Image (cartoon, rainbow, N blue to C red; front, top):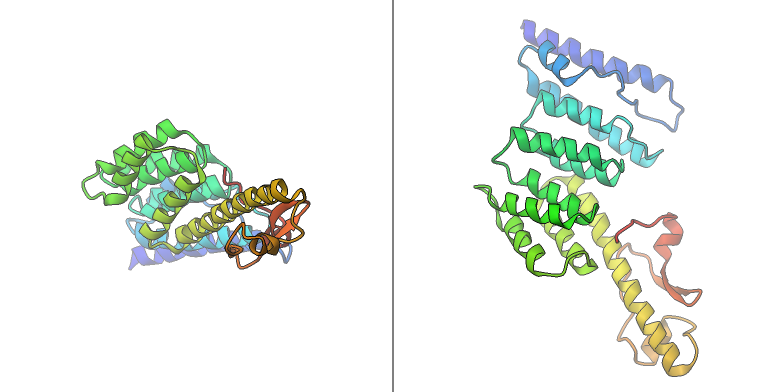
Length: 281
């Protein structure tokens, strides 16, 4: 009974910290920074062995923190701090390492922190295949450090319960061309299909759509240049490429938008509406 009372007090303490910070925010800044969280070791000592329930609470606050900052300022100053606390409280929380590594690299633009978190996960879980796989994935897709990626794909493939995906990519990066869009697309699709975590799937789907869009635009730009070489002018609209037999149909835009011609080049209306474009390669 005493342990549960202490756990409740800890949860109330953390919630109070978050609430106090929220009070200082504008209506558009909905979630506190959680900057007053004590260290993971401190919380672990105070929790008297009730690590998992407290870790679950920190995880929920982290997802809330991530979601609100993604919708507002896209600043994640305390992302690593919270993930470090979480993985100290409950080192078995594999998604805190894998999803955290993706978020630190993709959203926070802090790959060094992602490396630290992932290496922490590999140290405490030497038998786990997902941590070295995501470590390799980050180095392949985001950092373009292909030698490191090959090494950790191989390491993931050697783990006792590793499925086919790290084994396939360990071989693929050795014998196939690396760094191109088709390879990146295949890797993101593999990640999407192998994950049962909705946040990981959401990140993967975003990159799948972005890569498909870039590949479509490159294809359409080649056909536009072919049209110019053949007829001495650029097409007025993409429909002209279909009418003149250069393509069978205009590919569907993966975000549900459409492709148009803008200043003589293929363009997605999604870029206009979103005001940004995911950096792919």
